[in-house]
Image 1 (cartoon, one colour):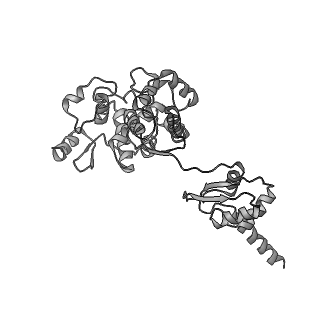
Image 2 (cartoon, helix red, strand yellow):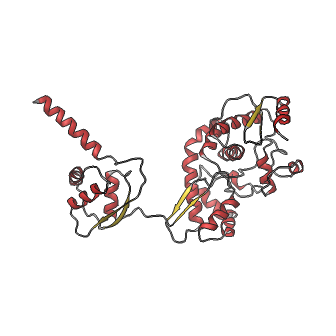
Length: 338
């Protein structure tokens, strides 16, 4: 009897524990749930179980009784199966509903401030100029620095930097629930994402002997010179090798940023542009980032591949070829570059 009772107790405990977990932690599918006026806790539990929001209505009833939860709000909700029971209870008590976003805007990796301004102005209610003007508003930038002190440092205020927030507005998909999102709301949402991605790795950044600004700058270069996670780690290794040997980085995307325009091909005369961004003219990193970047590029920045390569080039098919010496690099150019 003792054994049977023990097994039964353990089984019951495990079942209840499982029933309290989300139905599907990986699901973000939105499910509409209506809680009518006057619904009892039993009614609510049954509705939630029928809709697949909770696993077991009985466990739900016992749980809310144990927690002394009440005052659920009637209404139409949009819930998901990745919610815990506590999150479901919180939603039903506050009357807060997972709303459908009014706008969804995707900002791809490798985009500059001006390119992002164009994307947002085509999707939201403000003009491109309003976004650009805010990027130049030093009083506003300084307020953001106070809000995100670990992310936004004094480095971004260098007068030679084109836009202080260049590189700091993270590439991601953003949902907006307001009819008319403001430029400030958009920027704050993007900076929050950057803060979440970058600041947990401050020690990793320090291990590379970089400041946060230098790490963001490096990540933007890696983003523009490569397309895959493997490529990015190797190119990061090349860049660090060149910096260690006091070689110029000589990366074409910095020339294009210095020119302020897109070109299919960088010409020899373009390499002469006088700019603190042009890595054919300056040693070390450019004065600031040239675009935003992906998490892969940031990961490559803080964890580069250990390599002896100091040169690389892209062929016409998008492949990257690496060399340890300038002589090897010249041979690769003769072979792959026409």
